[in-house]
Length: 311
Ligand code: GLU
Image 1 (cartoon, helix red, strand yellow):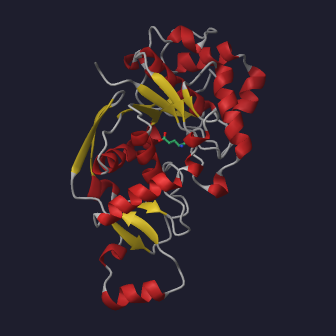
Image 2 (image 1 turned 135 degrees about the vertical axis):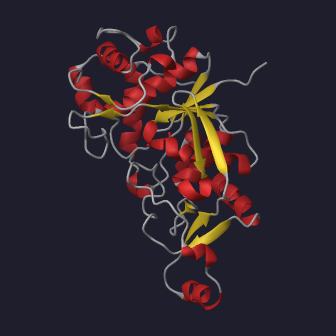
Image 3 (image 1 turned 180 degrees about the horizontal axis):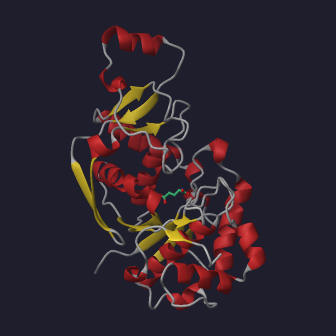
């Protein structure tokens, strides 16, 4: 018998869900349900400064409003919120440390954002000199006031994922992504570590999310396998773009669910999203459950989807 299929919603409660989040969530749900799988809801509230409980509750509410459900997870089970899972991240960190893969880093540029999933333009690839500090230089840093962040040293290796939507995607870990932060200097664990540990320990087998995280998939796969687990399959969903070509974002307050729920019923909103994603031929009201039987990634466009004329 094959492995139980398990997909996930993994929103960060830093703002209200927007149209792009809803498209990815719909595709994640359809992917798992069309394979007869389960869904779980994990709250990615790693960063205390960017996580709000009001938004977290609204996110769960907005998904349910659309007709997307899950079988396990937050809020029914608080154990699925990253904020309470530090012990598990500590264990993974200790394991990597014990294998000599962790080093201290004093470069602060990438640090503040490390607890959030990287959005375009926010990645700071490349290993830094901190990995090679020795003698006086290292002593000076260690004696200085600034506490270090922690990075994981990646090997000069190629990692390939077969994306369920986009096909083969390969990166050289050292050259394309470089060493990355796994823990900030204030002790907060980074998105890359937490998401990898959680996808592995929560038995997630299908990761469906927006395409801006495609470039994180090889390092997550490597981290999961380095920690001795099996990596999930990945499928990255198209980004939705505003008429001016800009990617929709929570931070820009684009078409969020507060606005969308005033304008559309769940079936109307699903119909428009399904049309944009190539799942139906014309805009008409439809509920997510009606799309399960005919869901096929081959229908979904590759590349960004312009929402002009539909929203
Ligand atoms: N929590 C991330 C976000 O809301 C998504 C992480 C993931 O799907 O891997 O952007």
